[in-house]
Image (cartoon, rainbow, N blue to C red; front, side):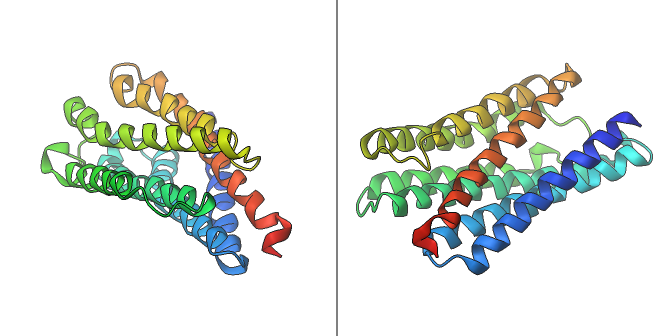
Length: 222
């Protein structure tokens, strides 16, 4: 019961923040960059809701294992939406820094995105099972991790070059999100307590959205 209460409260605040902040930026933002950030935030909240809402329901009823199918479908949807989330973040970097070329890098991001989604679609992932194969959990996250590395590097390079005060901590936030997420992929099946790292991982996403929110609140957007 304490776990159900804690996760329910946390998820309500998290999903509410992501969706409300996203819709606000999307509908009221004057700058196309802000609207793009709004789409990214809405996608974050909407995608995670497919996993978190069934999880909360399971905790309040018959337990996680009894709802393996709905949790697995939610995890599958979230895996895809988070991939698109980082692809949009890449385009936010392009727009923010007025990048006109880098076709090779763009092609690489799209390629990794397609590969990641294709791997998620493989039936060998066995999404409907409570305990899914670790090998495919690792496999589908390899291109996802490379997307994260690219995002960290390009934001780090540009923020150092331009002294961008809005996104100066973006490389750290993205690094933390992956740093907390990957141990869950690797070890949560053996050590369930590792799953608690999903909380700071989620907070890292909140931090990313908050940085984008600064763009909406800036005078240029008024």
